[in-house]
Length: 111
Length: 112
Image 1: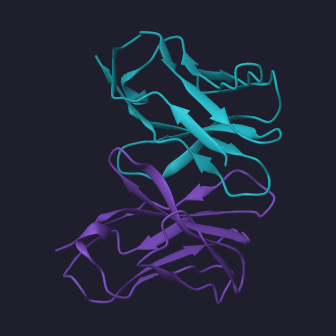
Image 2 (image 1 turned 135 degrees about the vertical axis):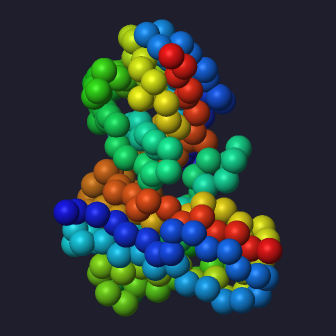
């Protein structure tokens, strides 16, 4: 079945550092890919999305590119802030099943 | 304001005492779902509902029940809670043809 694998955390970075969180997927067909973010004490919220190969999703300075050849959707940000500290979930939607989530990666940004 | 609400937000109970966690959404979404979140295991889906009176099992349905009598509500029922159901629970909803799920704030359940 469909699955998502993302790098284990926690990831600890200094403010203004470059962030990469790796995500790879296994799916039949051509899924849509997403990153959700969970801030402390809150539910998940959609951060960005890409619905077809080579699409780049972006929001709040975060970016991710849908790479079909490597089945990847890595999350990047050029300069993280303390307010970016959260848990990040990679997810896929193949249309005939509910969203499939990765296990989440906790990011801590220190000043 | 468009939102998903859950009650209670925190609950401590004892083994075997039946409980219900309520979930309500005001966005007229067809699809609703329950997840549990545990350290190292991420989010796991318990049950989901594609519409009123239509429910289906997710990845970890054992020990849980749900019902969908109205479009806006999707309660999670634990008939006989056990300590391994101690977890953080999230309700979510979306339109049936949409990938964007809206999550509630979570319910932290402790079963002693």
